[in-house]
Length: 117
Image 1 (cartoon, rainbow, N blue to C red):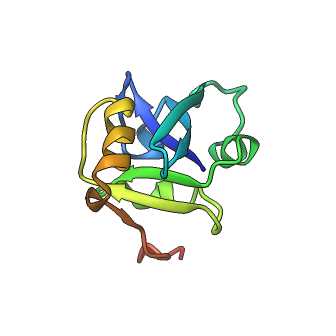
Image 2 (image 1 turned 180 degrees about the vertical axis):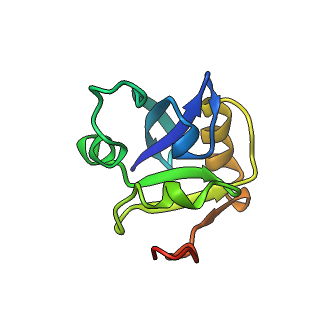
Image 3 (image 1 turned 90 degrees about the horizontal axis):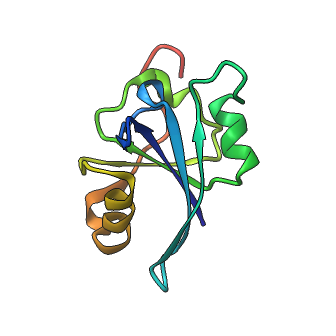
């Protein structure tokens, strides 16, 4: 499974709108094995859109902060699984918690309640 974490200045941004990079991980939940696939800049004008980047790297899940902004939900395809958390820290800490403390992470229910959805 490939998991993306938006980050800003090296820390978990929790929201695509605030992120300057995406950290992409390959995660095996059974063996708890994690490897970094790539760190991709998202604030470069020549960069692919967030959705295109996620598609390019076959990302299955994106981890967002529980208080992400509604705008960032529209960056994702409907088949993308969005996970929210109150956890903070560096991406490595977030992904470790994701593996060892799954109770801190919840699937986002489709439709964010805004006028666009």
